[in-house]
Length: 451
Image 1 (cartoon, helix red, strand yellow):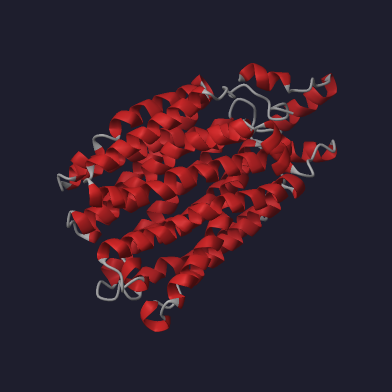
Image 2 (cartoon, one colour):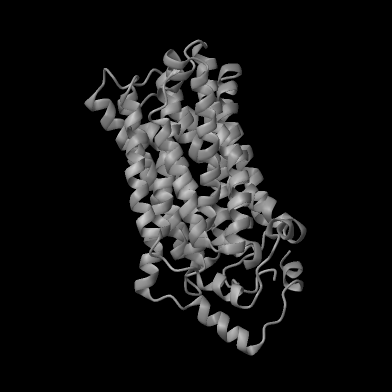
């Protein structure tokens, strides 16, 4: 694979090499801090919005929008609307990726943030089934599609914002900041739901769950202000000045690097599966199957998510030292074994052991997720890097984030929780095999990848 990629690289002249090196390390410490803040704040807000819905789906949406269904069918319906946004992500990645590769990263990131934030805020004011009938779940699905399209364009742009500004040799460390967004976003979403339950326990199911969705609009305003002050990435500016932009980035991506696109999505599968199974599904499993209280379980999940941040920081720093592939191989290998112990630990109903089960999942997710902020962009050429990174990330979400929670509900109903753990281990094997087929990119120059 490495030799095939090398054969497609055009030789750089001395002048272009010097210019590329300058672009690769042009950002000062002060400007990189600003870039890191922009990428971090944006993904924090985006994932706050997305996770707020996941928590609502696990706790109350079946009663608010699908009250006529049985408990199992209602939960399945709530998580199906959750999955809809994952299915919409690749569409958003294709749309935003096209324009991000054509006109620039910065402006597209502003649009994606607005789309995601406004659709989330509208969920907070959407009437339930008892007020407008079947129109309520229909509108919910529409808003989820819009939310998914926005998120499909968000992550790729945030990752490129960080990595295309970053100095050579430290791309994974700076690419870590958009990867920290999910940790903080989830903690904020979880904390807002927890506070809403404590402040208004009697009205949580009717109104309290809406508060986090309304708060997200204020967070979006902060994110917009930060992003509007950031310059376009030097790597994209260089490609634009040299007239190297693609008119049809998506077409070129499929023609030249479709294997990297699919393999990158395969690597993302286990990360999504670990996260959404351990948070959204296990929250529902603990409260509705095991009978654990919602408030203590929210606290357990929120504390477990801290390990995602720890794993992300460790992963990003190791990736710049020992390489992206080695870190991913370690994380995927351990995940194969961990999948088999998650639900035996959950079934104890011990808060400590349930925390260990979820914290282990999220630590492993972070150990692979932390390096992806640099690794996915490094796999693709500048001409279609936004499209490639965003689509790989989003396709991985469909395969690892949308399907496993839905399958988990059915597996639990048919065979019991042990089969869900086996499913996680199988996904980890798939991701491990995908990693082995991808090249190491730690020492690659962003202007020369598959150009």
